[in-house]
Image (cartoon, rainbow, N blue to C red; front, side, top):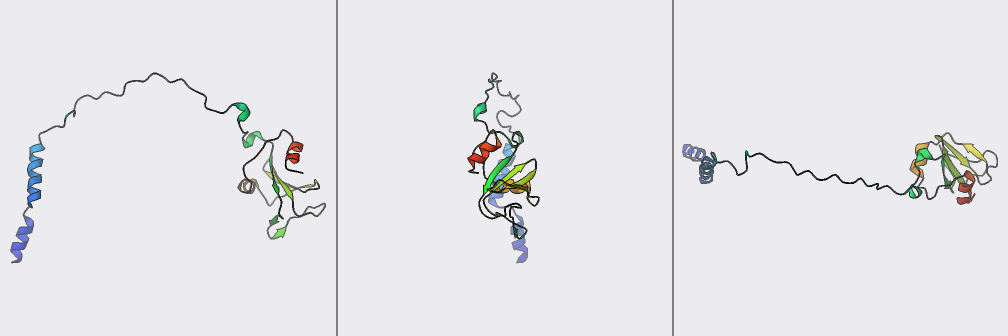
Length: 147
């Protein structure tokens, strides 16, 4: 009994027989267009190069064209668990954070500046938002930020 089941399983099914017959018929045929020389796309005339950049007066300067950047920091600045205070007047909030020449400087409302070595340019880039204006002088920027 088991021999008959194995023998029946070894024989090809009707679908397999039909596929084998179709395959044998198509063996000698070549698809149309196969073996003919192919031609590349026709050459197109050269296109005029167009300057798609903004006009110079609308372009924003890159970071290497600026002397520095600054942002306001109204809340107290806490670094390494301690609150940063101005070394001269003792104020601890309403800072301007300046980033220039890979250094970070803090400026209090009274105009005292101190370098903060615990901060770096990477921190400034992560924390600051996009620039809303560029200014020709440091004083213009201070006026713009309300200092």
